[in-house]
Length: 327
Image (cartoon, rainbow, N blue to C red):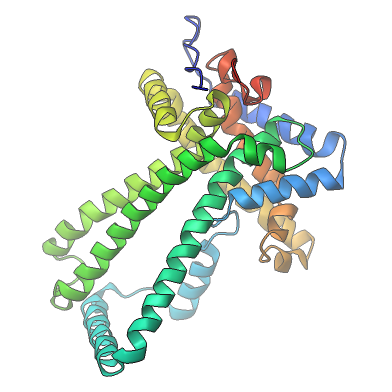
């Protein structure tokens, strides 16, 4: 059955508050996880959150590792960028020479590894798309199982999967273009501040930032819109775009709120690791760290849901539960 169109906003809606939904998200997190604590429900929500984070770095990002690496190597010296590019080209030529010398077994091996990596990547995107909608269902409903929302939102998840697959391919093309420029563009003769290098890198940098923003908006808003309105990803993007045009200031402030929220989140995680001593090792274990930090994941998932609920009754995922008339 064709899903119902999103309900139009009531005329009374003139301002969408980006702050109040954060307070509601804290209340929702407290109600779901701590009002009536059940270990089974905590673990189930942890599994849902883990599925929704399969293609993300999650709370334990790479910034800490990067800072540790920089502290060991010392500050980056940009004046040796030309030598680095030259060494990179030389290494690439050596790899090609090795492949040519042993092509009988190297080519099939590289092809197999490439197909295997592509298969794993596609499978993770598919699982992540299912997990995103399932996690929204877990936060908004009193779900006691995984099977029901897994099958109920299969159509919406498949649409989300196709969109993310195209988005990922575009990101891969940008990476390949950058690698090709580094290896074949003669950058060994350039320094970081050459105008030619800046001209080449600027479009790639802007394109990467744009694709990252599209991916973030998809997870933050498009997935909840798919859940509440039971529509495909492309239609949900159309709905989101219309509201972003109508309330640009609210969405911009929402984006700015993410900065202090991310800082507070990182500080809370670090403080938790310090106070619990050995827990810092557990935060590196897949799934386990999601279960430990489940309140953080629920909070970050509930925040955009409450933000969108201000658009009217048909936008409140907690009221509709992802069920539209006619379903």
